[in-house]
Length: 216
Image (cartoon, rainbow, N blue to C red; front, side):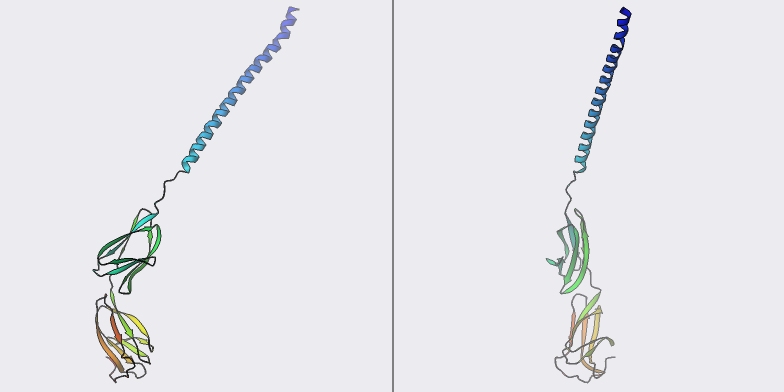
């Protein structure tokens, strides 16, 4: 009888023991999973916050214009005049990006190009020194004229036309010849070009040709 009772109690005790172990394992797994999830979430949140932090970008840069010509020039940036520069340098603070820089002397464009400015950096532009001179030629006559420079025909001007010609630096003779009567010089002028001051030649307004010989 006693043996029967003991045998009857043994499976119950075993089941209870196994159940306790199972419960303990489940509790440990749940705790480990919770800790791992919390740690992963915290790490992800920290990484996410860090990746969204960016230092503020510098949105302006410096444009420096250098003038070593000893001639007064006017500086334009994106079509806006920033004043005159006779000699030395002009430093301008501008927004980062591409800007059109133009330098003008007495109406003559010396520089005209795009310059890229990066935030926090500096870009420089040097004033170009003219390597050729300019001559403004005006034909007031009601007929076309041939334009000669140092005896060589350069172009033809229509009645009333005005044109600017690029000519090598130095002294030159400019002749305007009646295109109707080949060889009849209307006017002959000597010019001296230094690259900064333009020469000017014009026919006498409504004046007939003088019958001069074709320039040689």
